[in-house]
Length: 159
Image (cartoon, rainbow, N blue to C red; front, side, top):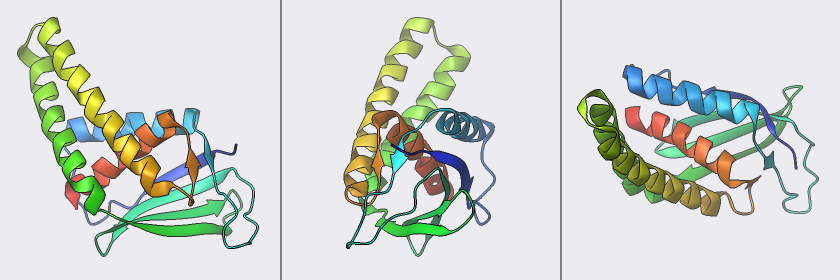
């Protein structure tokens, strides 16, 4: 399986992120580049250039856009996903993240752990939804889907 070697988020039109959201973004991008599994299957009988790939994520016309290029910058694929299937899980994710960020500041570890378990559960659900939406377009493992879901949340937060 191939991988993502570079990732870019088009957040130019988004509100400035909170420090917590900026931290989520940095960690997800770092972890994604360090370890990921991302491959493009052949579609419509056309061969797909081999990776590694450069991925640009953006939101255009209320759609999530994956612009995938080869390491040399040649277009490998572009696809657009509706944001509708992500709306509720993104909303739930940011809601539980707010609770988690607040808890870290003034709650005992046992309560923080409980909130974090709920946060991971919602994160897993978001990764599952993303995996379903990518079916036939891109092949990703669970950890890659989780990290990409975090970046979708970052884009969606301002969108």
